[in-house]
Each structure stands twice: as structure tokens, then as C-alpha cells.
Image (tube, rainbow, N blue to C red):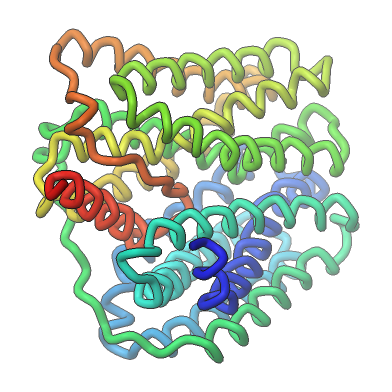
Length: 420
């Protein structure tokens, strides 16, 4: 089935792969180049946080832009802007310029994801939507990992590594725009009120905020940490790759477990494992690259799948008609956490040193586990396994479109089970 999905939508997946390579390149590359430009850890945290400010804004405004001028124009305009900003980074090597550039790129990537993912959703059918979602996640993670390979082979002090993502983003237009049929404007689901969302699932709501901080740390601040402790570009690229490969590999066994046990127990266990991995990296990572990789694997393999698990857990307590609205609300909560994450890490690294990077992640993952234990004392009954909505993998990099696609899969699967 997945081969069939790839056969019908290969051009769209190829274009998205190139977009993810471009995004993965600029995320790590700026952290490395910032050190070469003598930017401090807190200055770089502002730059990294700016991406998520733009991304959150884009997720709110892109649907309206699409409704007004159409998918093709929005996609082309935002993609062209991304390509231009990537070229300008090495030309305007100032904190303020990079911060503005990251806000703009975050906004544009959010809009590009909304547009491309709506095309993907339009091309998928009820029978293959789950496979399309899984393949899309593989493409996303694969693009980020491929970006690290490119960085490890280039010179961060020159222009070439900035030109490559710019070219890739520009080339990504061709397979996508030449293969898709423009879809009609869509109606954006209004998010649930935060008060209602938190009341429905306090654990998922708090977890989304915490995981936003962890994800933004992985996406932008790993390179800053690596340069602070004197790692080579190659080793920093390996750490980032391990985080995302671990996330991809862990999604499916965790999904299997989540459909067969009390999800709260799994959430607590994953938070604890992630916290232990981060503490291991904080205490011993600077002296042992192997330990650093083990810690990164633990963190990546638990924090990223937790995003999907928290959505699935929340759905156990929601009516079908509320699921899409809840996913939009969770994206907002996650985005706020992602904005705060790099800023707190940058401040911590300035106060206690580079190990604050892993210590911050350990605190967030530990808080996830502790709050999960607390919630088990407040909501004693767990949802019966046969009544739980199926787990579906969703990447934190996805827009609300893919989040709502996952909700459709949950609903369809549950309806099928009820009919049987």
C-alpha cells in the first residue's frame, strides 16, 4: 500500500524532501555559523526562538492567504521568500538580521507546509491516508538527516552551505507544482478554547507545552551546544542525526504499545527515560562522545513520539466532532512552548555553562513524568484498551493540516471498529 502511495504522489514527496533538507540545513547551520561570527549563546537562542514565532504566526495566517489567492500563488510566493532569506544570512551576519530572517522563514515554512500538506491530503484516499501520513513523516525525518550529512561535508565559514538550501527550496517547486492539481480553498478549523482543551485533558495540554520546549531545543540549539563544548561540525551533525533517526525508529514500537496499555503509564515511562538520557548527556557527555550519542538517542526516541502519543491520549476523552479543533489548539500550545524553549536554554547556558542545554531538557522530560504521575491520582480510571482511539504518528514539524489528517484516521478507525 505504501509503495502505491509513493507511486501516485512521488513528485510531492520529492519536493517535500528537498524542502526538509533546506529547513534542516538552515537550522543547524546557523547555530554553527553563529559561533564563527562570535554570537553568544543567548543571542543565538533569540535567533532560534524567532523561527517558532514566525511558524506559529504562519499557522494562523496561511489558511486565510490560501483562501484569498489560492494554493499555487501562496506556495510560490512563500517558497521564493525562503530562498531569498537563506542567501541573505551570510551577507547580513548580525543578530537582528538573523532574528528577522528566522521569523520570516518560520512564517514561510509554516505556510509552505500548510499548502503542500493540503495537496497531500487531497491526493490521499480513506484507504491509504494512514500510509501517506507515515511516508510523509519518513520524508520529513529523512530530509533533516540528509541535511546533516551535507553540513558535515561543507565549509561553514563560506557561502556554499547557504546556497545549497536556497537552491533546494527553489527546485522543490518544480516536482510539486508540475504534479498537483490546485485544490479549492479550505475552511480552517477553529481551535477549542484553551480552558475547554485543558479541562478535557490536562495531561495532554501540559505535555504539549513541555514537548514544544524540548523539540525547539533539538531543532535549533544542538549546534549551539556543540560549538560551546568544542565539538567538530561532523560530530554535531551526527548528534542531530541520531536524535531524528531515533525519533523515527521509536514511533512505531511506541505506537504499538500505546494501543495495548494505559497510555498514561507509557507517557510517564517515556518522560522518565528521556530525562535519564538528558541527565546522562549533561553529566558525562562532554567527556565522552559515545555517551552523548546515547543520551541524544534516548531524548529523540522519547520526546518526538510523545507528541503523537499525547494527541492519541487526548482523543480518548474527546468526541469525534471536537478532535480537529483540539489538534489546532494543541499546535498553538506546542508553539508557545517552542518559542520559550531556546530562550530559556540560552539564558541557562550563559549562567551555568553548555550543560544547561541537556539539563533543561531533563527538567522538561522529568516534569512530564511527574505530572503524569500526579494526573493518575486525579483521574483514576484509564480508558479501556478496546475503547482507545488508534495511535497515528505525527511529527512536531507538521502543520495543522497533517494533525487534522491524523484525527480523520482516528475517527475512521474507531467507526470501523464500532461497525465490526
